[in-house]
Length: 401
Ligand code: LMG
Ligand code: NDP
Ligand code: PMR
Image (cartoon, rainbow, N blue to C red; front, side, top):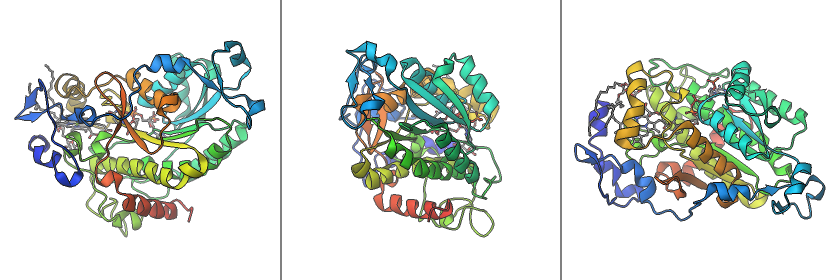
């Protein structure tokens, strides 16, 4: 059924309400007349910014000198001997114990100047993971964070502050996906688990750590929230049922607890796959609302991204075995949307560290040549009114208002 529905999508994809233009395909492979390269509408929406040579750019590190923070904080690596005396940049990456988060931690560590605070719910797993991919000791610290508990989020923030490290970049990456769950499960505070973890946990974390980011003397402070194509209904992937839809947020306003109210944001019946996609829409809306409220005042860059389809990660651990078997070749050979964990990690590391990706309020994607570009979000994922409403309700739910 899902397949059938997915294969009858072109009208949805070119829905003018979403402000999209028809795609022109050259040499497309197609299924039932539908271009399987529609996922590459990423490439079709003309990039306004290209950053072609990531490696070269990253060689040109920008380094903070602690002692000159307020005057001349930028030193190019034309003076490499100075690097040794500079402090490392600190980046908190949630969910760095596997998949994209781990690959990003590795890519950042390889850049040399970064210290990655791996914010993970399973301390031992994270420690082992860091070792297994060869991240040098001096480039990472594992700190406990369970996003499914707001108490744990607050504790993490306290612990991080006690570490005395400045916060230069925050990456909200962790996520849980429960496509086969028949019944909802809940966070410590009683929110449906996917939205509770992926959105509400990160919302509280980002709100609390905003103060820390503000205090950093690093000139390219960033707050990055990982989004996805499947939350964007202006793409083929975003039209595979069940589709993301936050509705009027009545379920969220009711607390997502499944008792007095629905566990779904739109107030509907529980659907694990939809809850995940909804949570990704929340992630992308939250990034934009942060940008709206704080970019001008703080200079912090707020960004989201779709790193590509990393079909081999732990995200699909709860999917049926046949899906896990077929999904990677399907993405590799049919949709061509596949990207390796390593490549995806480099992409996110680029959003963290590349001076060329400093624009705020952007949803980054990459085309076939792995060049980054500013992608367009779906109508719902760029709805400013919804972003504001989501912010207000989320604030209440996490105890900030
Ligand atoms: C649903 O599962 C859940 O039921 C629902 O609750 C919700 O969670 C939802 O979105 C979440 O998922 C549906 C899921 C599970 O099945 C699918 O939707 C399809 C999965 C797509 C991935 C597999 C496609 C496999 C295609 C074959 C690939 C082989 C590799 C190729 C190499 C190629 C070389 C050149 O169901 C399953 O996991 C079962 C999957 C069974 C797939 C059956 C095969 C159908 C194939 C049709 C696809 C296209 C084929 C094309 C051919 C063409 C040619 C060029
Ligand atoms: P993984 O499952 O490999 O990684 C998810 C990480 O989140 C794991 O480290 C996991 O920890 C952690 N996590 C889950 N729940 C919690 C929690 N309660 N508290 C703290 N950490 C938690 O998946 P991916 O690497 O694929 O996903 C990373 C991000 O990329 C997600 O935001 C996802 O939405 C996004 N994304 C992924 C795509 C893909 O194709 N895979 C495509 C587009 C976006 P543990 O190791 O303990 O399980
Ligand atoms: Mg999708 C045409 C391009 C394309 C892309 C880029 C993705 C990405 N997917 C595409 C197409 C299709 N998918 C089609 C045509 C189908 C029907 C066969 C299909 C099915 C499908 C399923 C069942 N796809 C999935 C699932 C999942 O369970 C994954 C999901 O929705 O997780 C929320 C998924 C994904 N497809 C993607 C990406 C990136 C995902 C997973 C992860 C995510 O968005 O975070």
